[in-house]
Length: 291
Image 1 (cartoon, rainbow, N blue to C red):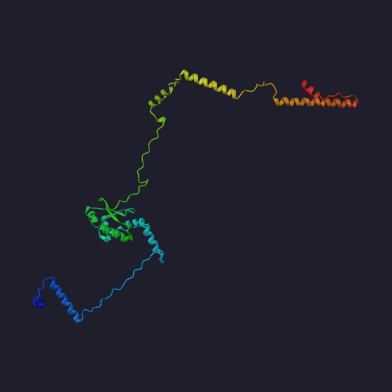
Image 2 (tube, helix red, strand yellow):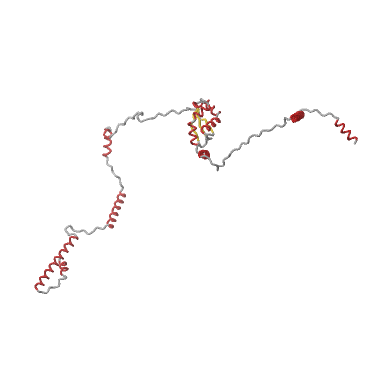
C-alpha cells in the first residue's frame, strides 16, 4: 500500500510535457471555445433557409394549348427543318452577336437537320481558324437564336467567296441569234451530182433468184389454187340466153293460170248447153307438162 502511494505521488510530481504543433493549436482552440461560452457568445441562432417547393407536372394537370404544342414539337423534332431555315436566315444576327465583323467574312451555307450540322464558309484562312476556336460559342448562339437545340456541330468549309454571285437572267433577246442555214434542195445540187444520179438510175436492177426458189414458189401457188377450188367449188354455168330461175317460175305460174281459166270457161259453156262436163282436174298439170 505504501509503495502504491509513493508511485502515485511521484508520477503527479513529474512536469507535464511541452505541447507543440497541432497539439498546441488544439489546446488554443479549446480554450477559446471555453472562454466564448463563459461570455455568452456561444448561443448563436442559426438562420434557417426558406424551403422552395418545385412543382413538377406529370401530364395530368391542366396545361395551356401552346405549351402542349411546343412540348410535342420538341419531342417529335417537328421544328428541326424550320429551325434550319431560321438559322440560315438569322446568321447575320448570330454572327454579329459573336463578333461585329464575323457576318461580313463568314457565310452560313447549309444546315443538315438530320445530324444537326451547320456548314460555314469563311473568306480567309484567318477567319477559318477563328471559327474553329469559337465552335462552342457558335453552337450556343445559334440555339439561343432559334430557341431549340437543333445545332450540334459546326463544319468549317474550305475558304471561298462569302456571297454567291447573282445569276444574270438570260433571255432569248439577249442571246445572239444563230445564223439560219440555207435550205438545200436537189435542184441546187451541182451538175456532177445530177449526172451520177442519172447513171445510177439507168442501171437495171436485176433480181438474181435461183431456180429452186422459183419452183418452190410455183408449187406453193398451185397448192393454194387447189385448196381454194376445194373450199369454194364453182356453180354450174348458166347460158346468157337462158332465163333466170325466178323468171322461169313466174312464166310457169302464168301458163298454169291460163290453162285453169280456159278449163273454167269450157265448163261454164257446157253447163249452159246442158251437156256433161268432163273431169278436168288434171288438166293444169297435163298442160304444164306439155308446156
